[in-house]
Length: 150
View 1 (tube, rainbow, N blue to C red):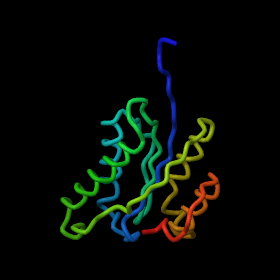
View 2: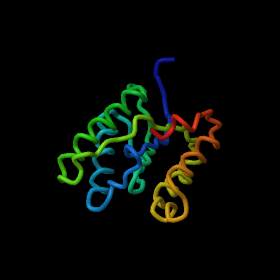
View 3: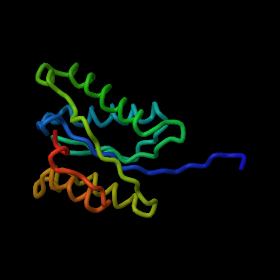
View 4: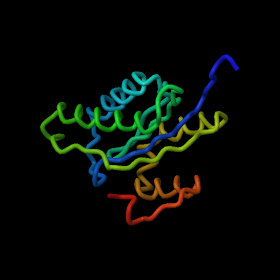
């Protein structure tokens, strides 16, 4: 084969350290745009970025030129440093150490887009922890509750 043809949709989820509710207006949209820029810099086309006050969801196409771990390292470290520059109230902004990343079937991309669009409504009824546990169970990821949240 002369070409490397790749199309890997991934749904990435990560939270603020301690799940502190620091992603508020006007910083929320700015943060989502900033994260999208980082994805673009890695040639990982962002489809949608959203979330709630304590976490983000990113749906993107993972580039064939970058590893997930390198993308995540840049997403989290760069955006954490950048958030601290926006306002003195964000001086203690950090991301939790871990993250979740899940492959998305191309036929389900629209479903995931709608899910991410409706995060604010969704979290009126469900905590981030419950949401994340549901993803882990859906994707049959084995986990130890003691190590997921800190």
